[in-house]
Image (cartoon, rainbow, N blue to C red; front, top):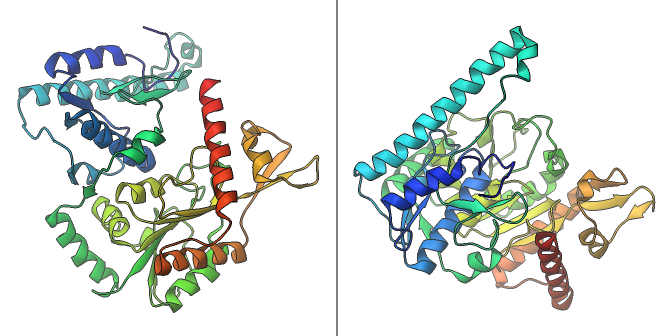
Length: 389
């Protein structure tokens, strides 16, 4: 086994051997998605469904003991699902459960011991691992789902027709709660999510954060067209000021795993940014209008019904904004002190939302098609170069 520092692959060989022993890998795809982030959970379930459809296998989802959203697992997928609750499933779940308990207990006790006796921090190592089924080593220290070329396998996602739907019970419950929230029965709405620092705190990914005040003009444009705006997120979000037909779901009493997926699955389109929640919109094939996108190489939507604009990229040395071509040729720009991201202006966000409505009404985007193709071709080449490196 190749040594790796990736905690998601540590000890994983033994878990995968157990899964292969219980279920023939030629007939079944046993998979445990990373359940700690909604973006990873969504894109990994999409990928798992695509693998099962492409390879004509039965999908067996074995979730971890903790999950950011437990309702996604209960949705209906257009692939064969192993629904038996036999001793083999019980064993696979038990192994995950007890290994997770060991992980949390060991590191929890260790953290308290080293506070009292700091010198033991070098003697008692911190052992972080996240046992999973259905993953393997990819490029470098990265992981990928077994049966894919890389973690984000665009070719697979765009070539397989997956379909994920809410169950009738989920739809009924979601509809009742949405009316209690103040959304009329026949009203259409847009889900809005703006990444802020509150959820993860001060992290290395803060360059992806945005200021919700820059979206006010776009919000008014949506509500004047007769729609509602549902602000998604968690209670750490900055409360949005009261506006007509705008519901601050992130700070409401109605937040739940079910309502998260119900609202996104039923919205007219998803207005988001460089954050994992837009992968949930992908899960349900909802049109995406993304602004303030920072990670151009891997994040832009791959579906024809989506649109995006990136954050502007400023070079301190050159004293100017750089072009998209220059940005795509720059390695890890967010780690380079010479560069800084500049958020899209309220006018840029408004114009992008306006453009997206034109598509929804007319079925096609405006703009220079040749320039669009040139950009996507450059992005794909850059992505391949990164993988090869």
